[in-house]
Image (cartoon, rainbow, N blue to C red):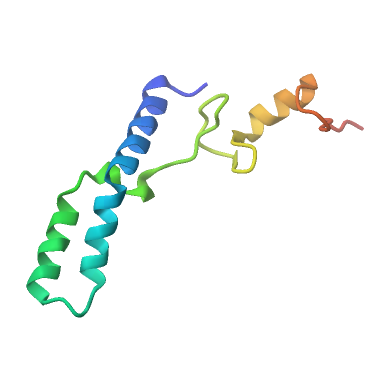
Length: 101
């Protein structure tokens, strides 16, 4: 099980990304628009830099919904390989059998 502080930090980042997504998108469109004057684009770039760093989507990290583990994450199942193996061994995932030979 991952530390609760790390799980809570990730939830806080997700909340910030959702909160600032529209503002970040608008500022990026202004920065990329070549028809606008350079000063206006530069001001938008400064405003974008002043936004909280954790509001950037690239700061997000996928975590297992069961254990909170950040590594060996299967996107389709939203869990780590270890949690998947444990659930499969107990027979809690329909149609999945852990192989043994």
